Length: 273
Image 1: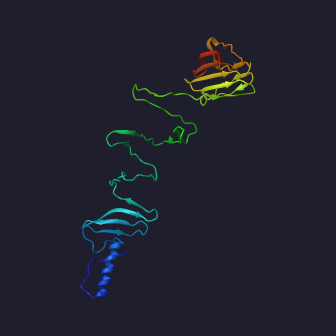
Image 2 (image 1 turned 90 degrees about the horizontal axis):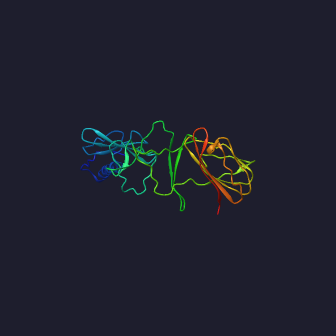
C-alpha cells in the first residue's frame, strides 16, 4: 500500500522507472495511507488505513474528505456510511438476510399499494412461523414464541367477516377409554369419535373455553353402556337412552357456558354404514 505525488520528472531511465512504479503502486493500492495523500485534488478517492482491519474509503472534494464506506476485512463486507444509500436488489435473484429485516413501520408493496403491513410490539415474545411443505402436504401457519400456550387471533375491520371459500373442518380425533373412563381434551379434540370396547363414562373435558362447541360420535363396538360426568348438562337435565347396540352410533353436540357443557343436539341410533 502506498501513496505517490503523481508527478514524473525529466530524469534518467532508472529514476523514471522508479518514479513510475511508485505512481502505479499508489493507483494499485487506492492511494492507501493513514492520512490524505499530499497529491490529492478534488475528485481523489483514497483509502484511510488508520484502522488496519476496517479501513475507510474516502473522497476528497477539494476542501474536505467525505467518508464513503468502511471495509470489513474479517467479514469481507462493505458498510456504507451514508444512511441515504439505497441498495437495488432487482438484479439479485437470490437475496438473503443476514439478520432480521426491520420494516421500520413501513408496509411491503409495489411502492404505491400496500400488500402486507406489520405492526411491531416492543415487548413481543410470540410470532407467526410460516412453513412450506413437500408435495401432497399443506403449508403451515403456526403460532410460535416463548410462551407455552399461544393462540391465533383473527380480527376483521368494522363489520367485515371472515370468509372461507373452501371447506373448513375440525379433523376427527379418536378418543379411547381406560378403566371404563374416557379422557377428552376439548381444545385438541373438539370433533371426537369414540368406539366402545367396554362400559364407558366420559370424564369432564379438559381445557374447556367458554363459548366453545364440541362434537362426539359414539360408535358401539359391542353392547356397552354409556355415562357422562355431571359437567354435561342434557336437555331436561336427563341423559338420553343411548343405543348401546354393536354397529350403531349416537351423535351429540355440546356448548360450554363457563360452568357446564350444555347439550345443543343429539342424533341417536344411526347405522355406521
